[in-house]
Image 1 (cartoon, one colour):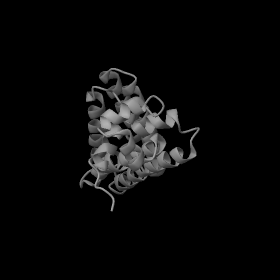
Image 2: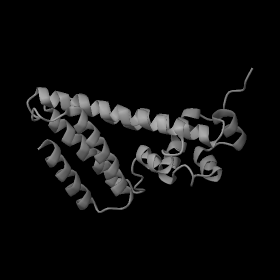
Image 3: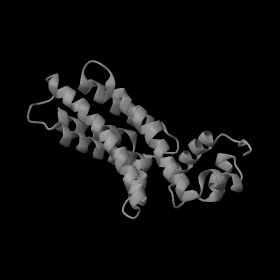
Length: 194
């Protein structure tokens, strides 16, 4: 009979996700992970396999614990476009207040590993698709509510908004001043949806 683990694997994965989010995959070492996760090397390998397998699990964790809950905010009743604006304001305000300026783990990883790692790219595409589909449904609702011009394509707008979210997260990670970030987002939204 296997001994029970002396640590909570779910909590250790959450901590690892934050290390990867801050440092990226390549720059994160075992010396970063083990103390952050508060586990031994043997427990790490027994539970998570290796750094790469842990990173893939961390990407899934990010999609489930960060991207998916953010997307659930779009189910609020009332004006779809007001819901969208509030979501974006909250998202970027939260990102600007992050003292580490981590940006977006998905966006960071697209730049770092996306072109070279097929299994990583598949996970990233799932996270992007989740956000795009959620925005598409919200924009379709806006069109049905008469808030969006009839010639606007909700699918295309959803893709543009995902691109804007990733680009804005990269601006924030690079240290762009908050006023400039907010002006950029406001200008893009006005151009896209009025």
